[in-house]
Amino acid sequence: MTSDLDLPRLTAIALDTARAAAQWVERGHRSSPSYERKQSDADLVTRFDLESEQLIRRLLGERTPHIPIVGEEQGGVPDERPTWFCDPIDGTTNFAHGHPFFGVSIGLMSAGRPLVGAVVAPALHCEWHGHVAHGATPSAAFRNGVPCSVSSNRVLSDALVGTGFSPVLRRLGHPEDNLAAFTRVSPHVRDLRRCGAAALDLCMVADGTYDAYWERRLSPWDIAAGAALVLAAGGQISSLTGGACDFTRGYLLASSPHVHLPLITLLAPDGAPTL
Image (cartoon, rainbow, N blue to C red; front, top):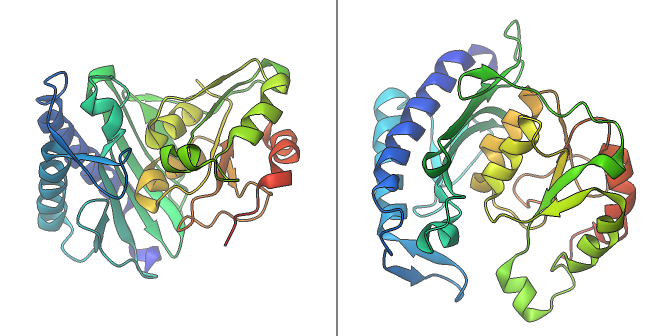
């Protein structure tokens, strides 16, 4: 029962675990770690991904043995119960190349609803944690221990917006490669960023760095933590056409309330997923 969840306690557990995993992962940064390819040349995994997830599973299993875990590397089967979703290194390609934009992401969702998020980016010396309002517990979101909230900017032309591109779809020239949407949005905003780690992009919406972020075909472990943080910080999350976001399919727009509708207008023409 979600009504029985102690979200502040679970947030603290998620943050402690993400910190421990990030400390381990940081040992491999700038070490030119060897990697293997998963389903494509652009989908990489290093030993640090595997070891980080093993550590996350052990620590969460010790402190919350009743909550199942779904992770990028070892999988798992989500259901309607509260479930941890972890990405042991979000931004593995960045990590493998020595780029600092990567992090450990741990989120709790229940029945498709994000509740708790903790993301630690060791090379950036940044961490975010928070939980969504639940019963008598109010929402709370923090960056490096300081309360944070989404951007107060009300003008789309002044907005800094993040997005992403699937390397696989981009190489194939797939209709959902996001390039058309990028071209359509670009003239209407101050600038666009593509940094290659969805969890961190969502955190930057939560702390007001970005006014918005959108992407296609993300996995639940990419976005569970960051989505919870955006909601906890006063932001909005929807599908690219403005409906409810299906976190299992990952077509997502996250933003401050002020620019959400204008961006839906720009994204909706090709926002519906190809089945």
